[in-house]
Amino acid sequence: MKNWSNFEFLNPEFLWLLILIPLLAVWFFFVRKRDAAVLTVPSIKGFNTKSSILSKLKPILGLLRLLALAAIIVALARPRNVSVSKKTKSNKGIDLIMALARPQSVDVSTKTKTTRGIDIVMAIDVSASMLAKDLSPNRLEALKKVAVDFVDRRPNDRIGIVVYAGESFTQTPITSDKGIVKRTISSLQWGQLDGGTAIGMGLGSGVNRLKESKAKSKVIILLTDGVNNSGNIDPRTATELAKELGIKVYTIGIGTNGMADFPWSKDPRTGLLNFRKQQVEIDEALLKDIAKETNGKYFRATDNETLKEIYDEIDKLEKTKIEEFKYYNYQEMYRDLVFLALGFLLLEFLLRNTLFKSFI
Image 1: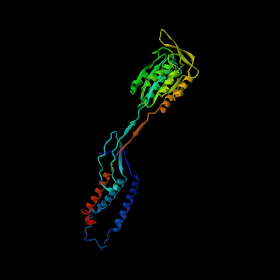
Image 2: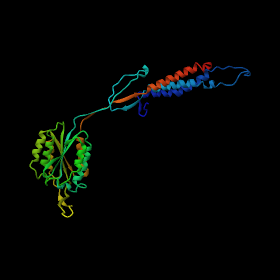
Image 3: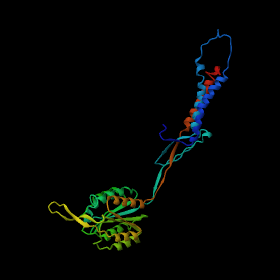
Image 4: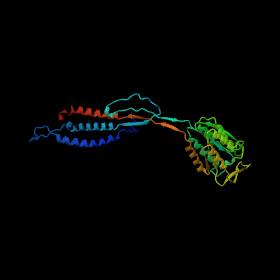
């Protein structure tokens, strides 16, 4: 059974010829009246005046011709059904019906070719200062939401997670399993590592994850909210390693300008954190140097909206090249119309030479 739900006309200009159909109908009517024989007699007495039903049905012959012409016009417009398949099918051949229709059979498929994706390491600061409330509900929770959304938009890339505070370690090796990556991000919390902010170690762990990568493009997204104050790897040393290995580093400083509510103590009875106002300090000069040396870019996230915009921009800057080949299945539908037109003409011929022969 043919599917007529999504068809098109290859030569729609032929449909304008359908305007001729009503004009021809009027022309046939007047020609029929003009050519009708007229016999004048003084009286019809003695004639059988009962009209025959066949004489009344004679206009059907002209109607059949018009229907045949309409079907041929639509066939010349080449109606065809268009669909896209996901499997390649070989073309077995072409059925020729009539030379005028120039039939064709197009049997094609859809293919998507994806080049080798990008390997990305997200190096995330999980020090206690990431609980500051200048972002809602705090810096870490705001980051987790944006980072998960970022992962969802990178279906063709491999992603790994490195966390750091006073030390660093790989939370998730580089993987194409986005489910694992998103669960890792969602489970991030402070207190897993020693206190402090070891930017050099966080960057170094990211470089270590990517040094064996064979991806054409390697990227580290380094996020921190403070100043390098611990660790045994100098950030500039880690930057040089990234540069030598062709790793691009995007750096993000997260935190508002001015004062913010920082955790400073923990209530021993309730286990809740106590907060107080402190000056936000981010080593922007260092982060800008890291980005510049590795052909990356530095961003400053002062609120939830700018943090989202930063990850949106990084997503646009680092695109995996995808080549998509779309092939369409064209299922020609003019054949039915041609056969219909031939049927009308054949029926008109048979009626003209049988039932209506005595009236012509």
